[in-house]
Image (cartoon, rainbow, N blue to C red; front, side):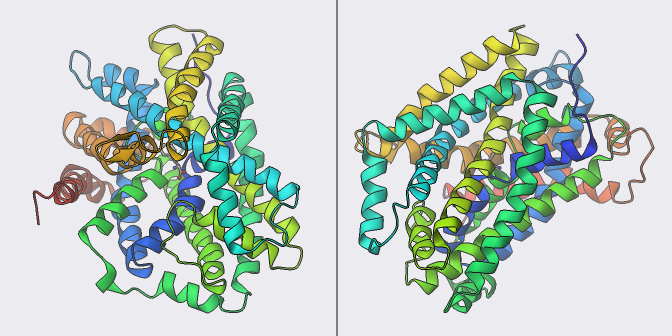
Length: 447
Ligand code: PHE
């Protein structure tokens, strides 16, 4: 059976950027920066993105495009007779865990689109808006409907295939997202008191940086770039053999980082202008922004724009997670695309119910002292993705033949690879060692 590919270079870049740019940038980055000391967090984050993120992303591209399969199958093809394919199992596990709690937040976003359209924020005090959020997320069925609805939407896109589903959707949503976020930035940065927020984001105060914030910055860089679990590997297997992987990865990393910074610049100034605590955590965008929209001219329109943007961002990332599971089921277990999508969507939506209910009826149900939602979040970003990153680096750095890596990265000698040695050095030594050190530090083994 011939495999489907992305139809164009633009489509491939939009799909990869669509996977990377998501709730991680717009919902998570501002509150992570907010709770981990702002500017100092941002600097550490940027270091991880450019020094570790790009090489790990390229490694995923190499494995995916050379293997021409889902993560499980690619490892089997590239390292036959070994147990490397277990990594594929980790990918599918990670995709299911991430997507299940991702769907919860994406579901909130859909409800907020409805609130914005219904002008629900208008004339409410900040306590009222906070109450609106907590009443909604703790409701026993409403957030579930939205979460399941969101998963069905993802399923419909994925069912239509790589070109007609994924590529078509990202080619319209991603450009729209860039325009929308720029508009929001202009609005937020011209608010009275915005300067305070920009200072918080850009002027580092290293006294606020702890070991844990370094781990969070690492986890955030992997999460935001969609690294360490095979999502980009799967997409890379649909990139044509003629494309330059290095050029694509730099574009995707820059776009992703740019959107995170733009999101920080849209949200933190507003947070300061309205006297909200920047370390409010996961509910930051749902509680602060509605107040901001209500207090600005044409706020009704801005509110709709923002939550639609967040929905687009979430959708284009969620489909990349679902595709990992669907590619595995169709290629390894010979499912039809339709049944593979139905099965994956169903299982993940069911897992997601646990996360969604973590804010309501199941709030007291904890594993390792955390609710399902928090446990899934911490487990995936701070453990599974970094560990996955180590394996990916070790595979490309030590297991694959250097010639094959070179040939894949240069597309068979078509593109110059000036930095190849530096790349190999980072992938062999620096990235695995740095990730390991931070992980050990986080569990308290290294101080
Ligand atoms: N990168 C996505 C975001 O920032 C989340 C994601 C993680 C998607 C891992 C795919 C794989 O929201």
